[in-house]
Each structure stands twice: as structure tokens, then as C-alpha cells.
Length: 281
Image 1 (cartoon, rainbow, N blue to C red):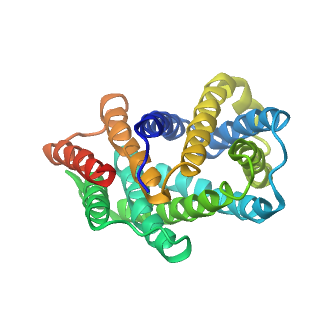
Image 2 (cartoon, rainbow, N blue to C red):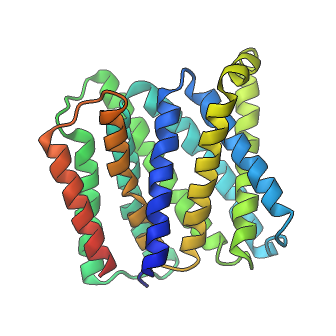
């Protein structure tokens, strides 16, 4: 099941928004508080949206609850990875692993079998994405820890992609699943933040409220688009197209955050685009 090109264009927009809020998290003085405020604001948007859509059907609630737990692990691993490594290195590893794992899980549990061309494009694309993370870099002890955290983040991304991709299809109304997903995601993280950072919350909010609200809006719109798209097309195709965010993140990291950009990274970005074209043919 391939994607309509209108859906594909919206997923590309989601990729740009996703790379942007990740860059905001990376550049923040406190990644945990930054991602919490973003998630909290996205939850407020979800609560508002929930007022205008019906409740998800009963079959969707187990997916929503499991998704909230996986998202908590994802955000904690992501914050750790950004504390240890560069955006242009951590982000491609985490996002690059996800499509391969999603394709395997979707084939095993959802019955989505890619064609030979799509499978080739998927592997071609993901190999190039992962190579972006290692281009022109050497792995130090801290770098290895960052890679481990990024790999764990990628596994969490793949897990919640399959869970949410399955849940949105049985929710009755995709927008109701999106709204409640955003609303529930911030609850577990709130407990973690109050346990770890209770004395720093007020000062951080005063100096970062607008910044975090912007990032939260980006995150909400980006993931809402992706969940909606997964109700229209194959999980592996949506997940892979979404991973063009690694190109955006690499450009943001190198152009705005001062991280190095080598020839290998540029070549890998072109290969990513080629793999995505194969996936859509």
C-alpha cells in the first residue's frame, strides 16, 4: 500500500517540523524540562481537540496506554542522547533505525508485506540514514554512550510507531486517537519531571515558555499528521518518508548549531532521497 502524493507532502512537512523541535530540545539548557514543556503544551492542544471529536472506540484504549509508556521511555532516551552527542549524529541513528524495525514488525504483526522494490528502497534508505550519523566523526567513549542511547531511542520510535499505527486504525476517528494520544503522553513525564526537577521548574518556565510552546505546537502538528497518514497508507511507507527529517536535522545541526558537515553526509543525504523514491514507486 503506497501513499497518495498529497499525503506524502504532508508527511514531509511533518518531517521538517519534527527536526525543528528536536533541534530546539538539543539547544536547550535543560533538555528534560524543555521536552516536558513541549509535551505538556502539545497535551493542552490535544485536550482542546478532544472536545470536538468523539471518544476513541474501546479497542483503541490499550494502544493509547501502551503508547504513553513507550513515549516516556523514548523521551528519556532522547534527552540522554542529546546530552551526550550532536544533533546531526544522534538524530540520524535514532530515526534511521526506526523504518527497518517498523517494516519488520508491520510484516510480522499487521500483515504489511513490502514489494521487492519497496524492501530494497527501505534498506537502501535506512543504510544511508544511519551512515549520516557516522560520517566524518570518530567515536569516543562519550560518543559510544550517545550511540547506545540513540539506538535505544530508535527502538522506542519503532515500537510506538507500530502501536500507534495499529491503534489509530481501530479508534473509529483518527483525529480522536491523535487528540487523546497527545493528551496522555505528557502525564507520565510530568511525574518524572516533578521527581527530578521540582526546584527548577518555575524558573525554566519563566525563561522558556514561548520557546517550548512553539516546540510543542510543532511536535503536536507533526505527530498528528503522521498518525493521520498511517490511517491512509502503509506504516513502513509513512515511517520511511517521515525519516527525511534526518536531512533537515543534519542541515539544522550543521548550519545553525555549528556541527561539522562533510562530503559523506551530503552524499548520504542524496542516497536517502533515492531510497525514498524507490519506496514510493
